[in-house]
Length: 169
Image (tube, rainbow, N blue to C red):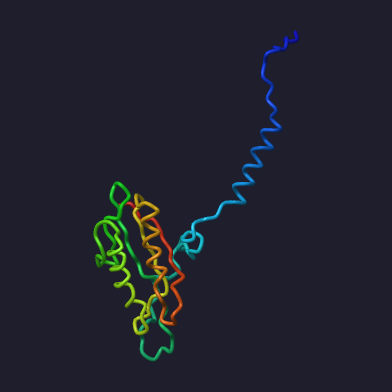
């Protein structure tokens, strides 16, 4: 009924292996430092439901209402190629760039965004980037960096940058 124990069998000390695994886990947790760009982004995900009631009449722009016009989100749309490179960047319906993101195209996007946050035109307080699901994260971070460098009319950097995945066509 009892099996004979093989004298040549290898004995595994599971306790020692678990101790070592936890030591390695603790080491990696304590020494991990995220990249500076990723560690300092203030990103806000959009709410899952609309916040405005479409059935009500808007009060923005009515004379004598005494209300301050609410600030809105500026929408950037980014489509990608099959390889994950940027195919096109649109600001609302206007095309900002087509093709790969180079330092020159990023500077051009920056120049197009700056007037939208100037003193007289400050109707936006945040940027929402809608990205293609195939876009590489590296490419998205380049655009987030350009958006985060925009200055609000009071001189503070724009802190509200969010991104969502585009709906499939």
